[in-house]
Image (cartoon, rainbow, N blue to C red):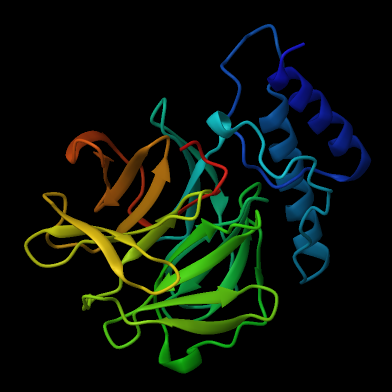
Length: 299
């Protein structure tokens, strides 16, 4: 029995016992003779959430032990958030977008950015400065204890990077006077790292890798910049000017499989950091303002 069948059977057992784990894996290839276990589980969870919402105000997230901190890396999904609160998954090898739902976060503000943990929980920053927790399995949303506008930071780019101890850190990128910071999602406090060296005037979207690297995508002015950033000091280690840029009103950024995926004004571009080439790949079904991917994604 191959590893994907084992994962599918474990999902069935867990779903029968206590609900579905937050989603991180790509769907199996379509096979008419086999049931779509992962999507059936997601649909069942979504129906349960709707029934619960009608009876109580609190959003209940699935609470199932994580069997593996990093499942099969090649099956890891990128999650993207639209300007109208639409949550989708994106699988780079097939360029497939799949709708998960619309996040119903309790705010009148618009979403600004997003980052995703290894367990499939998305933290989402809104234009009001609020920070919400979103399930990538069913788009359920709940408030966090995070106090908006800490240290004057309202909106910021977001991304996780792996730690040497096997954990991960949520990094945020603000304006020039703020630079790079990090948010502790246990205490929900924002801790500055320092201004970028050299300085970067505008907030950059961030993405990171499991081996501790951190990158920024900064689409402003006539073009855009791709930076590798030292997460400990905020020093910009290397830079490359991109042609993908210009007037940006919706943008995001994610690393997957050795390439960087740039979401800009509805266009999806793949950037190869080795050859420093940009390839237009497809059109997104939404205007993407936030993207997040687990640090389990393949390097």
